[in-house]
Image 1 (cartoon, rainbow, N blue to C red):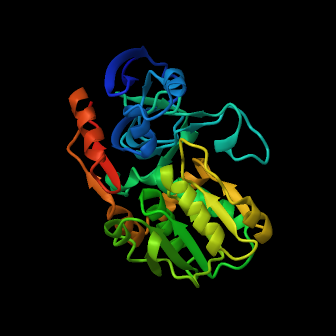
Image 2: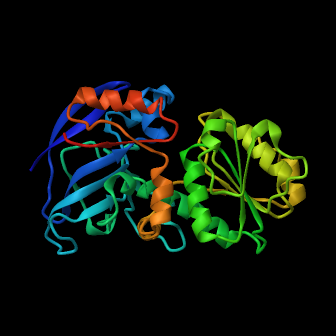
Image 3: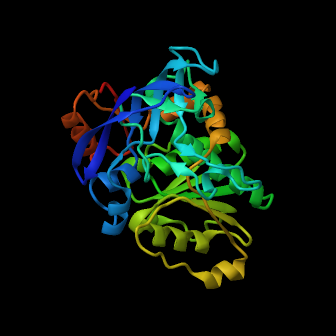
Length: 337
């Protein structure tokens, strides 16, 4: 079956590839709604080193996607079912290693074509039902699953004291971490530290918010999540190490293109644990879909979504990437190509 795949060939240049896709053993899905993340933006605008771009491109972007089942010969889904698509494709079993960290795993829209195509053919275990959840919100399933993965990992490793948990960052990752923490650790006090007053105002459901230059000297946290990313990684990690109590655990989620200096002296003195967290797997997607059944959670997630006009042409793809630069959190769009 001929598929239309909209690939990024060079930064800001989209080309259509025609590919004969085998659908005999997989579920056929029509992408319906998509969301843009920072990784997509870095590829689209060429904000990666030239070696990486030459290795990754050409490639279809987008890994945050929900779609409609067209056919399923396995009988796992019915035509018309709405599903969230899991972009992580593990190639082998590896006991004790999360599927998103296994060697040889493929991640769609990172070296492999993402979901910007006419249809997608995927194994049934890479799909999670989201029927009953608004599609605009269901596109957040991937990001919420990443947050859940980070929280679950910290929960397994951290000591039993969870009185105060800090989040450094005021973007989409920080917001979704806060939403998931509110649901999974309702007794914990959540502190969010950021640089943008407008963004911090969206975190009305947490205990306290502070601007980076106005953190109380007596603030103490038990554990923390670094969600700043980019040039903010260094300052965020430095502050966390300063304010965290001994033997605290720190989930690192922010991506930086540059090396980040870490105050190892105080990491050692306090006996801290740094936990690198990236992507997610099927178990976290299932938990995310279940969490989205809560109306309060859906309402909170919906508060950071900006829905752009539908994408009906290649020109519209360029438009949504430009729009996303000016939206404070998540840009979502209907896919009609």
